[in-house]
Length: 193
Image (cartoon, rainbow, N blue to C red; front, top):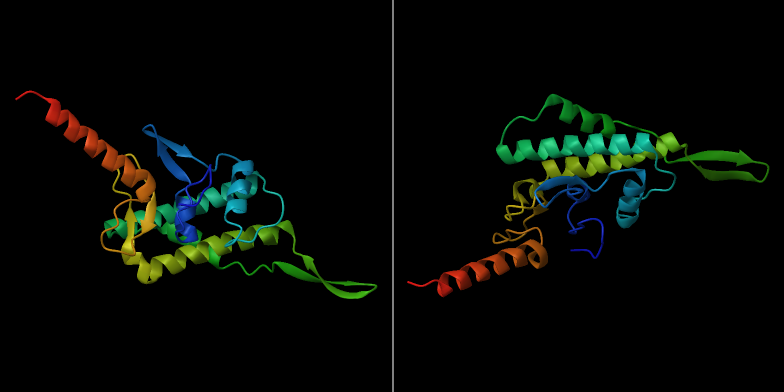
């Protein structure tokens, strides 16, 4: 697991890291992308895989959260082997169909140069990159290996590259399970009888 204090970055495909920004804490569903600042922090944490420059506002946050929800619905349908809601498929396809450029040509007195595209184009490029990763994950060979963490208090997903992997992270949920098993065995051994 990547050492990030806010987000569980497991080294999974980007689409799973996005879906994994909604976690279980003390039995409560917690959204780690609870505002534009949080989304900006997640984008910085994912900077090696996802280029973003610019301000994050409420509209970008709403769009990313809607896409995350759609990807989550698609993953649930894949897991249940059911047909996903049409709206979820349409949301991903809308993001994939954007053709906005990330840069534009600017011609100044000194000649041509590349200039940053409008914030709207960057916004669409972000959604397109997230949707493209989800589409590749859902249609590629890793799709059959997507798993939910076996710990009952965890909802994180991961790609199981080995047949024995059960936990999102052996250091976190795997360790919690081992500790719980140990304490249970110790209690059983201490009981009279």
